[in-house]
Image 1 (cartoon, rainbow, N blue to C red):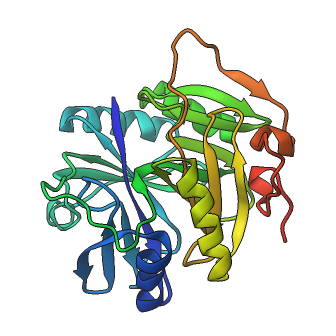
Image 2: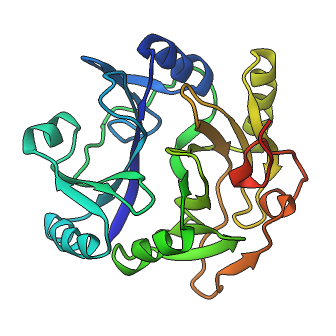
Length: 286
């Protein structure tokens, strides 16, 4: 039922500072300027990241696409029965956000999602603002009060699958990748890691030196994730409790392999033993 992880929308205090950060540090392409926001591309999507400086939203929103309006209407009722807050997005707002139809959703942990249909792609290639080796938006890590309960809704209603677990954290996928969403126990409102796939391990290591040279806070890595096989680097984002991550391509999902359970230790989050400043991902707050 789920087709793709489409975008994230982030509230920011200063549009100019956040815009410069996404261009000069993260290495995205500026796609569209809005009245009180901006959109950025990482791949063929019309946009992967939207910044909102209007002060109308308090925490991030993650956009996920479904195939048809009929599917969207079906899951709307099913999600309400599971306790999600659901609101249909008006047509003119859908058009301004570059998709045909959508639902604004809030899960039991208070996380915000948009389930959208027929989100736009661009025919023109993406031209990033710096050579960061970004291939595209690939995954998000989201804080949850109850990862097991929240994951059950994604599986039972939206047709996703659980691929692995680390302690109470749950990896969720729906296509050939190991996962697209990771739900982690967190007491922070709006905790989010926005993950981009990059070309190879060389790009990850080059970016680690790039960030150190520019005093960008690295909060995790470089390291290798045991569950997915990804080499990763996680760093500060433009707003509190929001982070960005680069990672190599994950191991392919296999229906023949059962979901594994890893212990809730730092080694289960990184087989290289790199430090983490994120309690949600095996570390301690710095």
